Structure formats: C-alpha cells, structure tokens
Image 1 (spheres, helix red, strand yellow):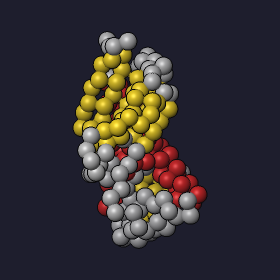
Image 2: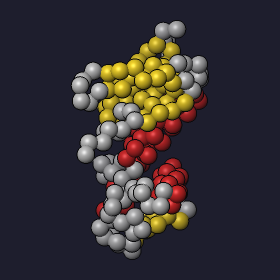
Image 3: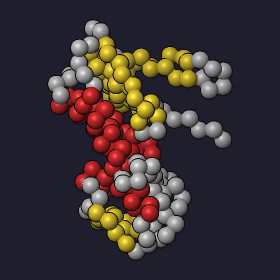
Length: 183
C-alpha cells in the first residue's frame, strides 16, 4: 500500500499525518488546529491564554474539550501525588475546575497543557480522520505518535549524543510518546 505523508508546523512542532495514497489528511490537520486554538498558551484567544491573563479570584467558562483535558490533568496530578503539574510549579493548587468553569486563585499561577495537549490533539486528529472514512494511518506531533488501523510503523529514536537514529520498535494500533530531558 502506498502512503501519502503531509506535515505542517502546529503545536510548536512539526506535525506529520500519514494516510493511504489517494486520501486527504485535511480533516486531521483541521482537528489539530482547532485544539491548538483552544489549548495553546501561545494563542491569545485560547482558553489557556485567557486563564493565564485572568485576574485572581475570577473565573471563565471554557470549552467542553478544554474542560475534559483539564479534568484529566487534575486526575493525573492527584494520582501522581503532585508530580504531574500543569502549572509548572507556579501554583498547582492555585486553580480549580468546576464543570466548564475555570477559577484562578492566585495572580502568579499559569497553566500549560504541553504534552498532554499535544496527545489530546493527536487523538482528535485520529478521530477526525476515521470520521472522514480513513481506516488506517498515523499522526505524529513531535514525538506524540498514534498509529491506527492495519499499519505497522517503524519507530526510530534519535541519538542525541552521537547523532543519527536507531531502530527502536514497530508500532501498530497504539500510541507512544517520547521526550528528551537534558539535566
């Protein structure tokens, strides 16, 4: 089977979508752009940027999609004993979510959905592609990779110290997130 691969700069990285030849990846890119408009701290009108600019003890209504990701972030924060923190240390307990209403408790708290937002965008893109009738393919947002349908995609990891890339695994009908931490 032949593949059509397209890439666009989105989510602060290069997003690649692979679909069978003759199919269009536009629905996937549109889904990612919509998530970026809601969740990016760099988009001035996004729910996240509006929260970060909010005065303390004020609230704002957020989109259902945003509320879902924030609720998941809160669950991860609780389950990890605070190790997972979308406030990046600026105030893990200085914000609250009640249904679709987001409240800011302290002026210094800022939130950033980062990799969690990227993973959500990838999932939304896959759903959009499937809704458009595309049965298999992949979406890769700078290391947040999801493969769907009957595809076995080789995954290679960059060698940050020596250069180049090495075979790592094959991924089929699943997701994988990679990251690089430099101490």
